[in-house]
Image 1: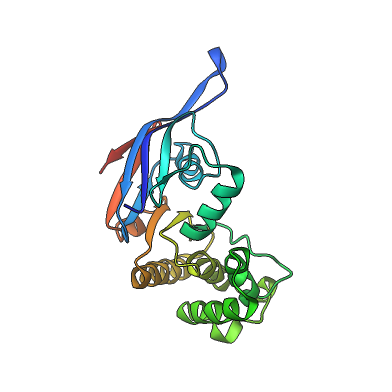
Image 2 (image 1 turned 90 degrees about the vertical axis):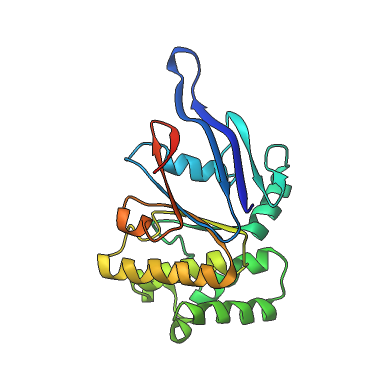
Length: 223
């Protein structure tokens, strides 16, 4: 399994002000599997991704990544595990404005300790896979919205992670560009055997995944 969630719950506040956002979530993601999670706004989809990625702490339950529970890891151990085994893609690209496309993609590799020369080679290869060989030296401001999101896809996949967590990865793009980026993202992930958890409001794109789950009032249900 690429990622496992066991009895995962999240509550904000306590006492009469307690708000349970997620209730007893159980999830198993196979290696290379593409899973879509749909649900209405405010249903807890982004909160679930944050828990799966170790960006937030569950009230109950645990997340297991690469056969390791995130529950008792130190901050440094969690950062190392996350850098090696997880990629993240958001609705907005979150690229560093002062760096080129190449340097943005190379960032996870450099953080992981790879030499600058090797990071450059791997980043160039990944940018070629997303069709941006001719734009590797451009900064984000010089790229179109679709190009910036393709750089974000390349950055998430360059480490060949076990799993990528994507939160509305094409939600900020026009329909035609979104289709191109979404299909490209899945194609590159398939070539690497990378699993995906994709939060999306779009049933057509969700339907391109291997499995679709609905988050409803904090509970995850099969569709």
